[in-house]
Length: 155
Image (cartoon, rainbow, N blue to C red):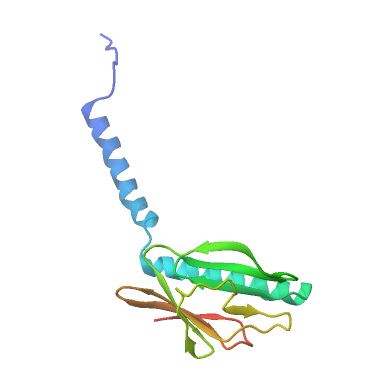
C-alpha cells in the first residue's frame, strides 16, 4: 500500500533548524566587528585615501587636506575661494580620534573649516599621528613623518 506524503517529518524539520542555527552561529560574529577590527579597517581606508590624495595633488598640481573632528573626517580641496569639502568619512560610534600634528596634540572639538592635515602638490604632507581610541585605550595609530607614506602602527 502506498502512503501519501503530506509534509515534513519532525526529524526533517529539526535537521533544517539545526543547520540554520549552525550557519547563523558562523555568520553573526562576522557581522558585528569589534572596535579593534573597525579601527583597523578605518585605518586602512585612511591610508588608501591619503595615497590617492597625494597622487592627485602631484598630478593635478592642487592642494588637498583632511579635516578631523569628533564625528570623523572629510577630504577638502583648495580652490580660489578657499577650502571646499569633498567627501565625509564618519567614524564608527565605538571609536574616537586623537590627532597629534607636528608634535602638538589638537583639540578636535574646535570649530574650524580649514583642514588640519595638508597634502601638498610638492608630494609632502603634514607630519602627523592619528590615534584610534576607545574608552578602554588606544587601538592603533596611523602616522607619517611628512615625507614618507603614512603607515599603521598597532598598539
